[in-house]
Length: 335
Image 1 (tube, rainbow, N blue to C red):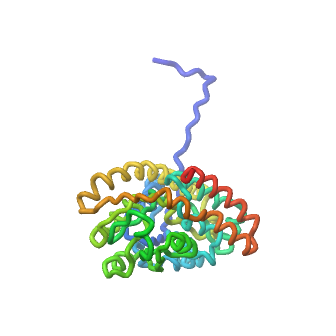
Image 2 (cartoon, rainbow, N blue to C red):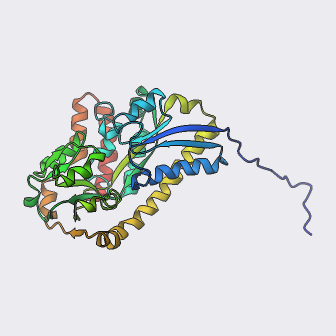
Image 3 (cartoon, helix red, strand yellow):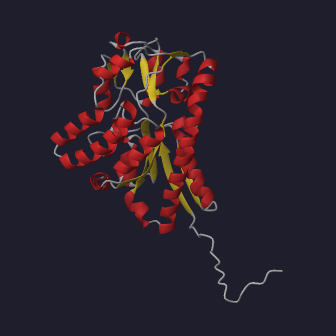
C-alpha cells in the first residue's frame, strides 16, 4: 500500500453550488428546427452542469413575440432570455446587427462565429447593447447560405427579376445588385410565400431549407455559395444577468462556448449529408450555378457598403473597427 507523505497537501475541491433558478426563454423558430438545436443545447448544458438547479421555461416559434419584438421583451425584463436576429432591426442595432446582414463575407460557420463574437466585444458595440439593457451571450451560425428556389437558376440572366426573400437593410442591396427582386417577408411566412408564388427563392443554407421543409414547395437547390451567416443571437437582460451569482454567469458563458463547439462539428457533418442524402430523399435537384466568374465581377463588397453607410451616419471609428474584422473574414472567402 502506498503511503502518503505527511508533507503532501491534499486539496479537496468542493462541488460548485448553484442556487435554484428558473428562467423564461423565447425563440423565433420551432423547437425542432435546426436554428434552435444549439440554443436548446445551451439550456441543456446549463441545467446539467448546475445539477438540475437551473431550469428554463421555453417559448418556441415566436409564441412570446416575433423577431423584432424579442429584444424589447428581454430588455424590459418580460423575458429573461431570447433568441432572434438583430439584423432585423438595423435602426436600433446598426452595429451589433451587422453580422447577420453580410452576404458573401464568412467562408465557414466558425469564421462567422469568431468574427461575430469579436464584434460584440468591441466597446462601441457593447455601448449600443447597454442602451437597450441587453447582453449577447452567443450567436448560432449556419452553413453557407444558398438559394432554394421554385425554378432552376444556372446563370446571372436567370437571376434577373427573380423574387427572393431578403429582410433588413443590406440583403436587399446585395440582391438588387444581381438583378433580383428582394421581398420583405418573415421567416414564418417564407414557406407559404414559396407555395403561393409570392417569392421564387429563399436565402438560407441547404440544411436549413430541409429543416424548414421547403422541399415541399421549392425543389431546386442552387449551389452558389453566398457565405456562412451568424443566424440568431442569444440575448439576455443585462441588469438581471449582472445580478446573478458570478458562478452562474460563468456557467452560462462556458455553456455557450460548449454549445458552439458542438455546433461547428455538427454543421460540418450535416453539410455533406444534406446534399448526398436529404436532397435525393426529398426529390430536390441540386443545381450548379455556372456564372461564378461573372458573379464575382458584379457582386458588391458588403462590409464596405455597410462601413460607408455607418461612417456617414456619424460612427466612423466603430465602422473602421468592425470593417476590419469583416474584411479580414471576407478575404478567406472571395480571394
